[in-house]
Amino acid sequence: MLFLLSIAGATELHTCEATAKGPAGTALAVRAFGGSEAEARRSVRQSARFLVDQRLLLDATLAWWADDPEARDRLAGTVSFAGSADLAAPGWSLSPATCAHAATPMEGRWTASWTKEGPEVHRAHPADALEASRRRACVSGYQIQVMQALKALADVPAEGRAAGLEPWRSAIGQLEACWSSTPPDTVPEERPVDATPTQCTALAHNGGRLAVGYGAGAERAAEDALKQSLLVRTRRLLGRVGRAHAIVGPQDGEAAADAKILEALGRIAGLTGPSDTVDRARLACTAVTPGPLRWKPTESEAVTCNNMSWTERPTTPVALADAGGFLDGTCALQVDPTLQIVRFSLRGATGDKRDRMVSSAYMITGTCESACYANATWGTPGKPVVLEGAPDRTDKRAVLAELRALDAANPMAGLAFMPTLQDPESLAGLFDGTLVPALQAEASRLPAERWRQVDGHWILLPPE
Image 1: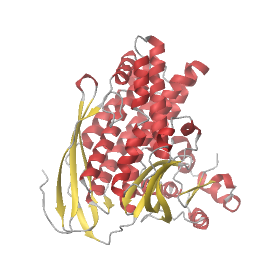
Image 2: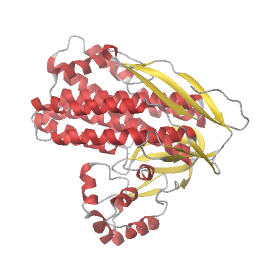
Image 3: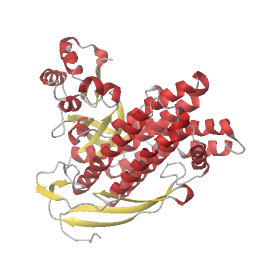
């Protein structure tokens, strides 16, 4: 229980709790944290979406990769049930959150470890310390378990895969138990607090934008971006798995669809990095003068979506406190309207026709919602900001200097240096010691196409 304290100038920790309800009476209790009640309510939605999407992703894998008829029926059921438009998770609804808050007179930096064995993290706000320590403690082990289950099934025929995916179901149960466990105390350390409005962009495997976060200071924006990236990464996975079943299968055969699904699922390895340092290195932050939220859909996936629902949003300024909610509300428009159309079309559909319609629904909603998040920009960008402990990418010369100093025998340093290494294939060269020497050998003659600039940060892509 958190008690309400009244302390002038205190740092407040808000905690909100809600219940996500799904098919067949399934219920998940969700708790989350924020620096204000609005932040904590948004964190509850982010947490609920992330946890629910793991269940949906497993069912999508069972249905379209393991040929499980029960999973296909469950997925069709999720599309048929409206759920909560604001949650935007097919077949699921979220109860109104109940919230409480406590206060401390300390302002500075907080340390937390979600479990006794879990990693210790440091943040500029107690809510961020709790959220970050939970993510580090719960998600890292989850994604390893899932990747191990998928690797063991790589050469197994479809009819034998469902039983082999049971460890994934177990991993989801462990993830949910970890997520809902009792939060630890946070330990303060007095330090100056940055109060410059900031946007942080989470970087995708191709050096482009993946998700954005906002905050009154770079540290707060960074944690918001990392929370949001969990949701967007999983949504992208759902979109890619749906696409492999809906489009690749009929066109190229089931074997090609299976290969595409397995390739897409490999990105689970990138939900979170192997350390907090690597996670933070996968961000590009910049100071912002608050203003409107705008979208410039440039990637082919975004252009094919209903991007008028983003680009024609009001162009009036959006305050820092409202930016995250405005973004969520805009991107959720890619989900419920699409599902309404599919829901109507599903009436009377059976067999393969029904299943293709369901996978198409997941393809469109997953792809377009994640594209909406990736293409958002808030206000007027200012100077790029380098997070504490993260590489300086604000100048190409700084990037090249760090490249020359890399030690091939220290893969973790390579991961922090090159944020695009987020899937098993691209990670292999780093950990077998071949990638760093290859990069260093060509440092003086890197072609322009190997560089991406995101919010004033220069991102170097590895050789193909």
